Image (cartoon, rainbow, N blue to C red; front, top):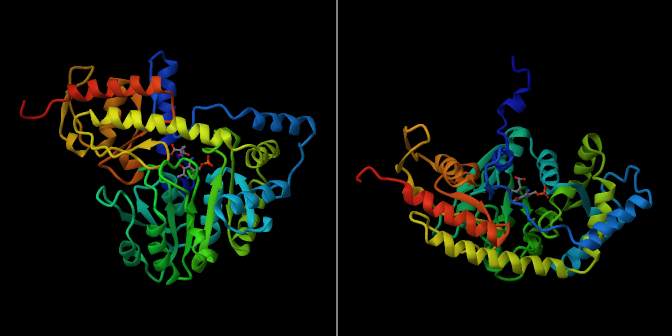
Length: 406
Ligand code: PMP
Ligand code: GLU
């Protein structure tokens, strides 16, 4: 008998984490797997940040912190928002959480009632819809297209809004497509948002610093809608600190108070040592961020070029984040003979991801996990050597596929 709650039974497991787990299992059984599944920088956390954590341990930062996080960290974040984004938030309008993930979930659980609608442009990161489901909300998906660069258009947003809409989630730079909204594209969306003052905007800015095309734009920059915007960001991607689990949310006071109430009941506060490390990340030299960006840029150019050589992969050079998200539906229907001599058909993106894992030993994530089943996602946050190995193997594997007519 499965005695888990309906809430959990209804929830899908995270596909990004599932594929990563599969790759790790294959690797430990001796297979030379290249994992391009999870989105996490392969760099080590910069030294000055690690030293700050060591100092925090030595200085006994071992007691519960305030629910919203240390004041010094919130002040550092407020300062970052002012300096980098030209946005004024007081430290009391910020709450630090266990990763951007918890910050997003806090916001959704704090705002969404049963039956409330949350507009999510697809492709979308795997966890949004499941978090909305946890809050018993309804995800309203707007499908974007390759033609619009996988960006939602203002008229699409307008059409999706109903009296039940309570939230719109926008992720720029985007996971998984790498799309980066320009200031004028954001402004057009902001005009629509301004007409619906009861709708909150969750602006997921976790990839702020992985932007190859210009200065980051936050939805909160548009004064008319600033009170509707909830900024989520964190140290995972910018400072190669995924495992430290520090993210934050900046918003109107009532949102922060609601999140504090929730967080106070189920996690208390984020890790104290990690918070001290994050403080060093925000207050220290930002050279490490620029250095990592330049490496990501080189890797992006490399993988784009290599993937463009693969039959059936429709690839655009991404403007941000560290994912390649080729359209691959022209491969659907292709056949191959599996290890047991049986004929198999690539029916969808999951089957292609599975084939690439089995045949090329490269782990990816099927586009269906991001509500875009005609695509597949590869994270290129790994070494150039790994990327060359992975994409040359994928090319060979895809060339082995056969079509019905030959
Ligand atoms: N938003 C997006 C779009 C992401 O890809 C991630 C990656 N995990 C997160 C939020 C949350 O990141 P973290 O919890 O590591 O801060
Ligand atoms: N955000 C990363 C990804 O999409 C990390 C895994 C996760 O949190 O989903 O791969």
